[in-house]
Image 1 (cartoon, helix red, strand yellow):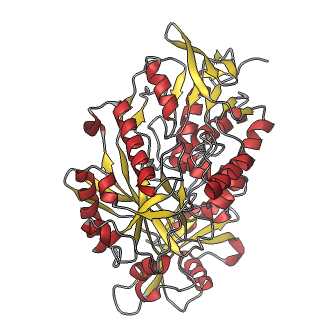
Image 2 (cartoon, helix red, strand yellow):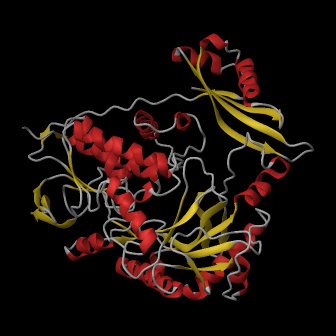
Image 3 (cartoon, one colour):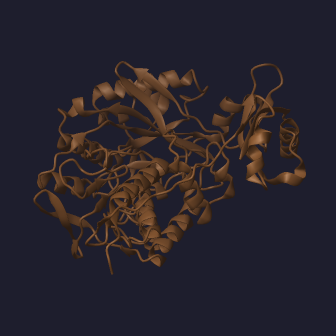
Length: 529
């Protein structure tokens, strides 16, 4: 793929004009083009009349010709897809490998194992996606929570009910493999060239189900509604796993349980494994009118049909902590994400079209081991305490406490609903959000929000709303692993993904699943029979 950058056009120009200019700059005839797409589109409003600034992606019918055309100018480059290969090891597995968890990490670990002939057994504590969606919709409508079928647990993991972002900062060659798998299973073609690709929760569900069916077609077995309850071990080696469906013998376990499997973390610690504290963050969901965000980002060009929905990513250091935005959902909604009874958790979600009136994003502050005496149990207890306070402040029924940003900055505990209508599906109730957090964290968040006003005009506008609490940004614990991806304390246990403390987001979790599966494949040959 060839990328042609810095194509500057007036607001009145059509997308086709950008394609034409890109082909001219790269000296590429139309007859040699297989596909054209907009990789990036931004607005330059710094000098006079705003300009649209495009990056165009060009795929040729003959990829072998791309290198020559990519040398045509300074703003032209070639993006080459690395070849991903894996070599099987010689040690023979006695039993099929087991993958615990069917979020992105477990899903891609299982897929690679299945494609290489290992016929993995996948354990998922929640149901298949269709039943999971029904459970989430039932909870949204009634407030009746299923602790194993919700926005945190079930086929696809927590990322299924999100914006479906595939952006990442890890820069791993395996990202291309993940993208190819998504495309093969029905994701929009644009994710191949978009700088900030997203699938959307609506399309992501079909992609996940399709990948799972490939795993099954290749001999893998997915056991839904089956939770991991213990580890069977002998002389420091894993020999099997205990589950709610019985004992499964294995000597290779991909442990990809997700960031909310608190009971599983407790089981590990109770069985003698030592977990570490890792940094995570807590805060709220901030909601603004999407149109107001775009006015601040695009200026006079706001509302132009060629522009994508406006996104932002903000951060501000306050003392030794960082206040930052996370999981920004343009045109999305705030969703009830509890997985334990009597506790309120918020998250954000948007569909592929991003057509809602509101923008929402987590606004969170970092915490770490030093806040909890480096005790993982204290860190988990801290999350639970915040969620319990949020439930009480919401008045029960999983309604959430909410407050205008200006009120939070001044500590008034007021909620006036005007232009921004809260989208949290279980309803909101006015509350003093600052009182739900330790004072230092609340004050740090206030300082961060004030700084954001200087970065996005109107961020602290009177109608903007905070809904709380956001507590599941990432896992609070890490299960240490060696360079071969195996647990330092138990041979055969392979910590993986967000829950084990090694990823953050769909893409990085999927890549970590591939890394772990590759480590198992490079060491072992499949079990016979």
